[in-house]
Image 1 (tube, rainbow, N blue to C red):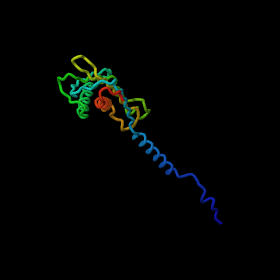
Image 2: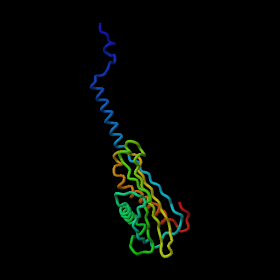
Image 3: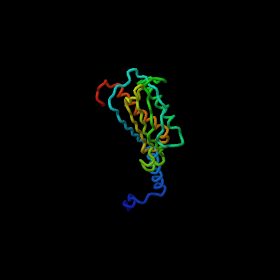
Image 4: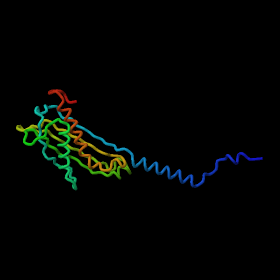
Length: 191
């Protein structure tokens, strides 16, 4: 007579199967952590309503880096991004020697670290805040001020190099605000 309970009783699994499961889980966990998505935040502050320049021609003054960051020429990078993005938006024609200027300040820049973000979200955040004023001469009048903030606070491999595009993301937020400002009828309340 055969003892069926011995043949169907679960026993310990061979060591090789346990190792394969542990290694498989470790690989799955590593892939999940390394490829976790980039978290990008952007904040915008809309200006008080005033009329946009009628001819929509501006000059872009070089951006001033007030962040205290050293190691790169952030002012030049941000000026280049502002000119490119304003031109691409077709909101304004960019020329030299016109009475309306875009004056740019880099108020905050933190380079951050993708490794730190991967280990602990918000540790090692990459942050940029840029302000742009539309200034008119003669009369030394500020028509509007826009602020864009962008940050990458968490993520894995996709966030490597965030410090290279974060200023452009802050400028994108500013251009979006300018679009609202330019398209609003004169005298309309801010949206």
